[in-house]
Image (tube, rainbow, N blue to C red):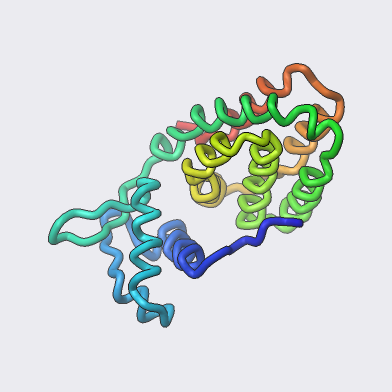
Length: 207
């Protein structure tokens, strides 16, 4: 079963704020007012506060006493920082998941099929969503809950969305790169960990 795109009200609000940052509704340095978002979305301030706290932990926004919450002035270097960490984690995950995925790659194949559709439609939102889902399936298949928790804590979905939609204005296909990884699992490629590491690093923003 595929993972739902949104799990909670907090995530919906987080996506709303993230979309505002990506689209330029809130410019770097501009204040994000909690009560205005709550009024706009017809929700209480509590889930808005939770969403803002999550985005702050991911270093997308910053808060200061008497100044409120503001959008950080992000650069390609900021977006690139998490990729070497992510690459290392996913290399380990691939090696741990190799036997399981050699037997059954159906979850990965579903995401590749969705990526082909997204590529044809030049749908960057769907590209980001299914790219993340593909990599999450590999980490989940490792069977290591500590690894999965650490990977999730990097805010992969947020950073991937920003990298694809913000720093890659020209659409590019994503399905074939991921299909190659599926084939490597099926063929029990002994270098699968290094292959996935190189793949993740190749997706990092260029600076």
